[in-house]
Amino acid sequence: MPEHVRVAYQAEMRAARAATQARTRWRHLERAHILSQPWPWPHTANHLAMFALAVAQRDRREALGQVVRIIVAAPGSALGRYPEGNTGRARAGLTRPMPIPDDLATVLKAA
Image 1 (cartoon, helix red, strand yellow):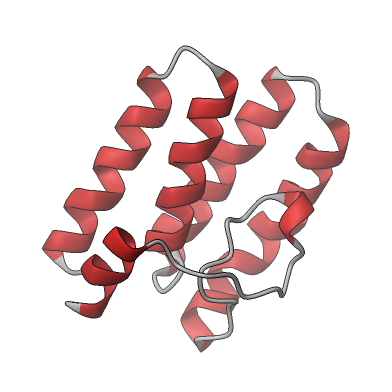
Image 2 (cartoon, one colour):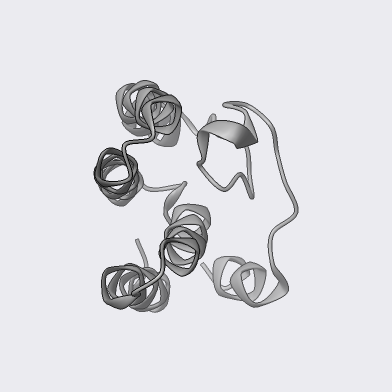
């Protein structure tokens, strides 16, 4: 992961940990997910954080969706087979590409 992407990814993960509202926490985790998709370890770490939040919220559907994503994240990243822009949430669909926010697209384009 290039340094400028790592900085943006870590900022989103820190913001997620610091957020006091679940909606804000999810938004930062989703943004971190978009940044992490091309790299196996950060991508998997992001899904682990999403799983932890789903468990804390007692959201069984999201937690189960994250278990599946934890299993496929690293291989998908390593093989370059991931849906660009996907937020990583269970409701987003495992293979559905989504638009990348402009600020994140700029960071990723420079990678």
